[in-house]
Length: 245
Image (cartoon, rainbow, N blue to C red; front, side, top):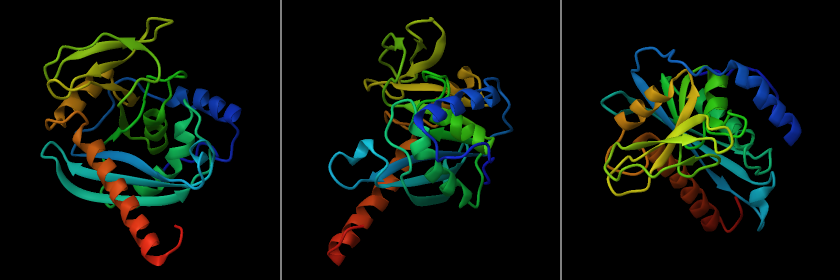
């Protein structure tokens, strides 16, 4: 997969916010998605240096993508990438820290997904352009944000049975920006929002379609396992060599 070259990455926080506002004009919130034959889950782990470096541009990002045949959910491809971080940790701007490594992983795939599940926000974002939107627009592929916690908005607790949902709204404007979705009975909900080329209704439908009895949907859960396995192996190799990564 090849990403569109729509902006640079060596930017300030103010420039990053302006890029989000500009690219938001390219984001599509209606269904424009082909027959879905392959879906992917994407996530990252981080290797950080000195204490406190989480909030700086130091360290490395380990990005992982796993592609599945849909709806069977049989794995057909996976790829990873390790890149130096180039942007500090700033809430609302995480895509500028994380997307470069994710793009490199997607470019290494042999099987291109029709739909991407991202561990992060989509439309449920202060500028309505979270990581799932950014990644979807740059790859020009349908995408969904599935976050474990809220960045903005408020919602009622959904019913405790699997498949229950409740509306997530902007606390200031009342606009619906996503939904709380209970993926399994008696577990905390996740927060689903549109990324690109999908309505919220379809985003929820696809998220529930990859449910397998756990709180986190299988694509992003297994992508998380993948990148953390890579991180553990790298730490073990470094320890055996007696040096740093």
